[in-house]
Length: 84
Image 1 (cartoon, rainbow, N blue to C red):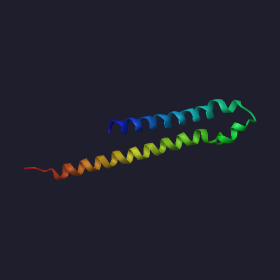
Image 2: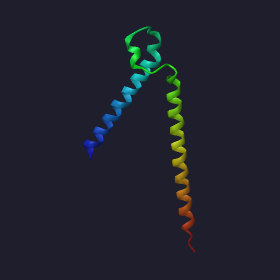
Image 3: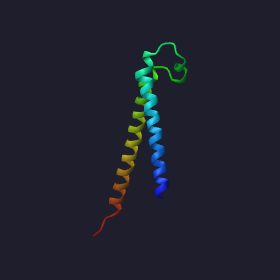
Image 4: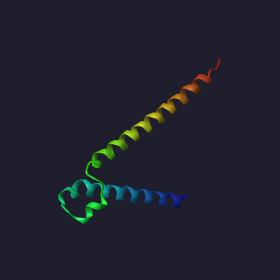
């Protein structure tokens, strides 16, 4: 299992590094480059703020639902755990 864990960790590192590089190039460098063929590989500039905001909202929603389910589950356990 150790080799599989290392492979998954390496894959996650490569994916996150490539997303970070793409986004950094898109936000910081691309606005200073005018009329170049590289622009066709990137989304319009309006999405530079929209994508991270939507991702943050989605993460907060999923986290809130998870915490809510955990709280409900622990409350139900306490309700059934009545001892005399």
